[in-house]
Length: 178
Image 1 (cartoon, rainbow, N blue to C red):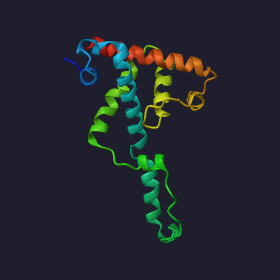
Image 2 (image 1 turned 90 degrees about the horizontal axis):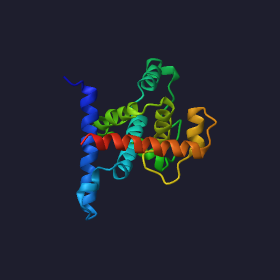
Image 3 (image 1 turned 180 degrees about the horizontal axis):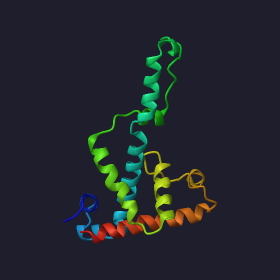
Image 4 (image 1 turned 120 degrees about the horizontal axis):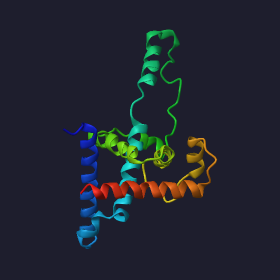
């Protein structure tokens, strides 16, 4: 009997293969090459970026509790209009967008793909690189932020090389699942 964790990984791999096949058909290519790691790698990467973005936007229960604590002591609450609503930027408005059930359902299996990497440091590189892309695959990844999050002195070229190799490793494992 398979564990639910294994079923979720298999389901994620199947979904990625189906997305790859559909994208190959849209580009008028034969769908037979849809299962190689080069075509699956961008899908794995975008799934990881979306998963970390969903994780960032999940409600913070402790912050909610601390905010509620202020309502228990009415004399500590600010009066209406004390604080002006700041102009929010693009990133803040995207963070406030309501999570969909599909995003939440896809988050955990996508993050579980990281456990398939044999090296813990590579897992951390993939996670923090996806985290710092702010929900959209970026052409220029902020390697300085990734390095700070990892608390590492690795060069950006090392981080980039290990990130790309990790994505290809996961894509190859997904391709084997078909």
